[in-house]
Image 1 (cartoon, helix red, strand yellow):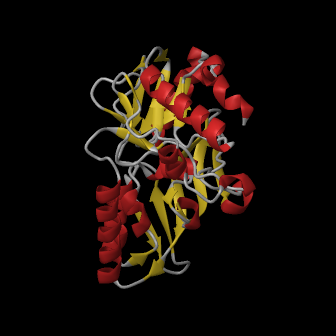
Image 2 (tube, helix red, strand yellow):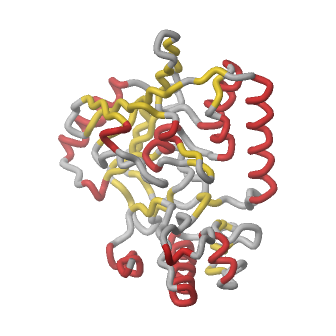
Length: 296
């Protein structure tokens, strides 16, 4: 259920098709007294590395039936449910002549996941569209959170960890449908040409660094300059096409993939004195397994 085809076992998997399902699974978690480390929400599975050496008490995923779009012409906003997959959202927006959504043509996954990690490409990100989100927390309380309250940053939506995002209100700008379609096609084509899509992966591994020590280079350029393209542990490999991607060449384990992340982090740190920050969400690992990141 993840893009990189690596993950553990869910003892209980809930694919919620309605808010009633969410209420039911919240009550199940309360009754089972499951701790935080035994529970997580899975979006589209696009930017996650889940430890496959353990299982999980409860994994919650919104069904693609959470995909309704309701447009308010008066406010020029759209309420979009969080289970919709980004490629479908791009198609729907283009068909309606809504400008600004087409950058997501290069971003796989679901809208909910894109909101939580503020997914995007280059200078464009999901929260440039989002005005506010709706959700429900693990206590069963319904929440509405605005962009101003959360103050999202680069690849960080700053959504509270206990909030399950169910919908977003997005600003809508009407444009020319033909131009919008053309831009989306160009971005999709660029993704196919520059990313290693022939193998499963989670997408970008590290965030692009910023600050005086970054030298202005992207994370991929730094890993490439460190000579790490093609570095391999088991079936996990730093891509020879794009150095910020780690691909699963067959039967990679989470340990294989994490070893590649650790090696790239340490070599870039030692060669360039730059401490990269993971963009991929690392789920279910013990603190000792992630201790190499603590010197940031």
